[in-house]
Amino acid sequence: MPPTGPLATTISAAATRRAIRAVLDGGAVRSLCQPIASLSTGDVLGYEALSRPEAPAPLDNPQEFLAAASACNLLEQVDHSWRVAAVSRFGPVIGHEQMLFLNCTPSALTSGLLSPSSFQGLVRRHGLQPERVVLEITEEQAIEDFGQMRRVVGAFRACGFLFAIDDAGAGASSLQSIVELRPDFIKLDRWLARDIEFDRGRRSMVEAICTFARQVGARVIAEGIETREQLTAFIELGADYGQGYFLGRPAPVPAPAASEARLAIHRANRLRRAAPVVTRIGDLVTITPTVTAATPGGRLMEHFANNRHLEAVVVLDGRRVEGIVTRGRIFERMSGQFGLPLNGKRPASELCAPATCVDASASPRTAARAALERAAPFQQDPIVVLDGDALAGIVRVHELLQAVLAEEVAEARNLNPLTGLPGNQRIREHLERLRDDPAGWYLLYADLDQFKQFNDACGFAHGDTAILALSRILVDAAGAASRDAFVGHVGGDDFIVAVHTDDLDAFRAACQRALARPGWFDPEGKLPAETRLTVSIAGCPFERIAHLSYEDLAATIARAKRLVKRSGGNGFDIFEDLGTPAAESAGAAEAA
Image (cartoon, rainbow, N blue to C red):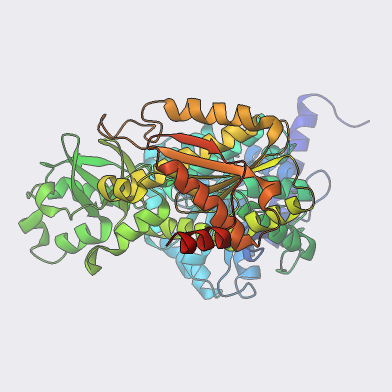
């Protein structure tokens, strides 16, 4: 009869400890690796090393083995031996540009068993550079002293190692670890992947973490991706990388992401690029610290020394932006034998560079134009974004260029990058379809009166805002139509609308109501109260001009618009009978 009670517990604990010691002493562990792939390209960023103990059940399960090792006070030794085994196994075989992700308990870092210099030597002996090794801080143990952990993490970072926080979103401790330790990677807990394609709560949390990650310069890895739908959802929500069975299962040797997953990534990104582009620079801002104009240089230096992710600090004189201090520029000033003595007490107002400020309503292209007009030494400085008189944040140059590229992609697919409305090619295609049955349709032309003078006087940003405001008025008015009205953006401040006769009166009334509102073109009230801007809208039955070529059709409807402009103020007129451009020219010749 087997023993029971305390004796049985003692025997069981002793047997467990012997089994764990046998695995440790004999190196009885299989090292596998699972790919972590870019959710933009499908390329493999790196591999997470996973260890499987060769022990009798239930200790052959890694989680059971680690729990037993923790109960026997052997967790640190197990954690270290598995990490060493993974480095020796995969260091020589992964690609030169790929990373190796290694699990690491908090106690392994703080106990001294794993020292930065010795671990640096180990990874180099096996063909890795520390910059390609990511230490994943796992949640097996809670971090009790974040001050100590920050110091230890800083020492490893000084040797080149990168860090990830594992299981983000699983609890308050992982979120605190993200805020306190500012990791290079944030790995989302796999429970977030469950039902992510339709669970609004999970989607909101993932989106919030991705937004936070962008603010602090970290990259997000979504774990537990097992289906195409989950993969697509994480791409839509902004995750940078993915890991899970759908992308690739753990294997003894490194392998690329599954071909099915790569195809799904490319397709999802094509659909994502077809979404509306960013139309205002304010949607790209990153919040950054500010200092007063009197802040001494030594204090400025501390800001950057204490936060390796900090790229720039904005210098304020009250609410007014005095300038900007970048990491590279302050380190350059403080370097050398006399850098700190000469500049440590100088105020920030003397150490900062001029800031390039744009309004939050400006388009990325307008902001890029302002960035390119700067002198060469300042062209890589972030753009400072203002919301009225208040500081909204900064936009990094590479993010600005990405937004401009998105505009260009939108243009290439015939959508106007400012308004997101169909451009000339799609306007032409829609009118060609209407030619088959033009009866009952009216073709309208709308534009802003004296827009060039407004643009020159108020600036490109306000010009873009006015164009966008008019586009929304037209779209909103068309949205209430019983038939499918069409709104296209010819370019500049010119729009084409096709609306059915049943909806014409309602469309006209909706436009007139919106245009009668004071300052409709300045929704944030930033222009002087006396500023005025009006709109001319002209139209005619499409049936009367459907036989014309596209060029003559456009010229005819544009001529109707010019007739409206003569009246001054907001105008909306329908001309039931318009002659062709050729007829008008002939009539003018006879009159002459």
